Length: 389
Image (cartoon, rainbow, N blue to C red; front, side, top):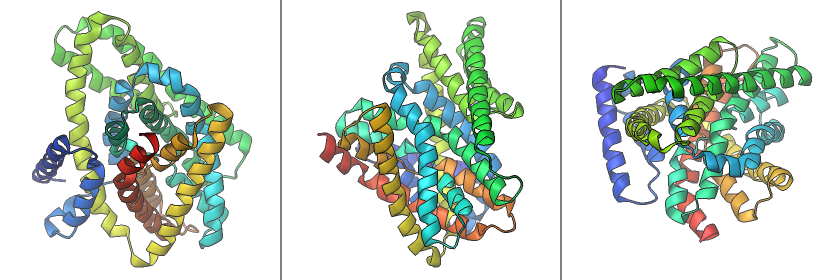
């Protein structure tokens, strides 16, 4: 993308965010994606393209870091059981159950159907967390939604990678092998992130100027990601863990408040800018893959996706952290699809593996993401108010 195009996208994002400050229940990412769909019909925006590398290595580390850094540690402690169980066991059950149902109504095998389910499993509630807070004032349910989203990306990537290898016959499936890979990738990424986050929280005291402290936070966000990926473990979880460690260390003493103020100011601007570009370009990209013959399948899968998420959320919460049906409903409906799902789709598309209905999977998955981002986010506020107020 040219610098001129990036500035135009940022200007559109600025206008949308300005409207958001004046209007409650305004799902910014959804509006940006719909605007992106409209921009796709203007030839000038043809050069706005995303690759799986750009999403994964440029956008995600920063967005994950700011979410983790701003996530209250006390909320993680309070809701750890439900967040961790939904982000691991819940994700696996969701992929298996949804994959089986998709195999019944589509031309795909079970493995390929599970691959679609893995694409549609990671949640991206950036457009609804603030809406839930504004609509209900309920911080707990918003924290559950946000916390699960930060952690389930790592699980989804491991599941997707394993299923893609099986679908392309690169290797067979072994539960023990999968479990070993999952634990290694997840725990390894978290440990690297925690160590680097702790080291940076101490090193930052040698930088007396705020600008250099901000530079160090950028190095941590991307450095933890890259180091973990180079080590063969989860860069996603490394970045999340490093952000949480920084938040924890800065929260232990009042004297660290000036660090928080500096980081908050910088990363809030960075987050808004990155989200503006990302969701506008996702909207532009969507139009290249959606076809009318995919809409019926996408509509059915969207309904199944919501139903399966409700069932798995209800079942997991019953075992690990009992929730009312109202909370379960909101947690289920708040599981929007977004940037991680788009990354997985583009990864599959780039692979172009033989023996896989990749065009069908890509087209249907992109359409389901559009349905999710529009229908779920636009109805989140009235649903939350009706259930929690």
